[in-house]
Length: 227
Length: 227
DNA sequence: TTTCTTCATTGATCGAAATCAAATCACGCT
DNA sequence: AGCGTGATTTGATTTCGATCAATGAAGAAA
Image (tube, rainbow over all chains, first blue to last red; front, side, top):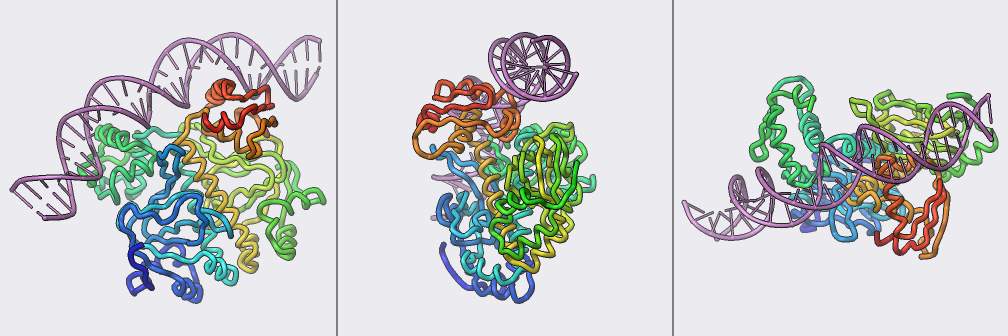
């Protein structure tokens, strides 16, 4: 981690709106702010590795962090992609447990770190923190269930279509937006090789999707839903 | 649910050793026992469906419960299989949330049910319960991460080999054991069609695995690790 | 035991996506 | 603007596992 620092005004602001802190009472927020350390990560920097003793909880302030597991021969499988406001490392909450995955900054990122021991200490006194942790975990578990089922039930073009739809307003109107990160990252998140993502996009051209760089235009969300 | 009842001596015993209650202090255990309702599920009975408002937490006492998601056309994808001691439904802990998956008894099962409102109420007063919930969720999240990565990194025979190895002592000695459930269930848990599981078993015969019914003999765990 | 039903195996075919290879594009940097 | 590296696209091939179909085995009920 390049620079370590106490949270400044901007960082406090972001942290306050994060998934973990937004539901806390003022005293718990203060306690967490007290132990927060802000760090600036260059792209590709590793936060922690699978199997290491877990000693830190992380929260993304800006940028994206990729969670993946490694094969004995070095191949990587992404299991989650966390963005601003997301909590990282809660899968190793239990005292003495180890990280189940490796976490790597997918682009230059700002993150907050909390010493796990002290988090546990605060959580044992303040139920609102403990509840917030449980809720965050609960939501994450649902998300991963969804990914796993999506993987097993849908083809690559369908998964891509569903991803695009999840970033649209639910009304049936045309939209256009910018992908929040590189296509290769998106491919990993969807469990695809980059080539497969590319082919999926080109197939979806027939279903009202236009892609140019990171810009996506969806002319007919309804058609997309039927892919 | 066939019969509803207060926990008897046997059920209390099992509950005490379950993942959720085993870490609690006596008072929290008492509070949870107070609100526990035991039910007997016939095979194939649905506990709850994806999308329903979540109002209950469940704990498996005996048997197995299968969690799956449905496709628009009715195909099912298993995301988790819970056995004795496991906590179900914690992915919908947040007040007002809905079940993310459908839960179905895979065989005749005994389960304990806890009213979620009252669980939240107790958890807000007693941090040990709250912590135990968070820990259970944390462990579940790790497991699902592992499944997801396993799916993406390994072939069917490799997944089966890893499953078998995870049920062996870590020493390199030969073992034999009984599969805890039907092969079709195992196939679902591993994200395979039953045919694929069958083929994987027959391929693994060349690597020191003998299967007859639910009986599995592993003559050379080392060879299996190298598949 | 006999019957009936469900589960498991085996074979054949098909489709989806990984992989390998090469060409093209985009962007940050000087 | 021009370079150069890395990202993306496209094509060809191959592998893996789903699916369909049919047979065989096992377990439950009478």
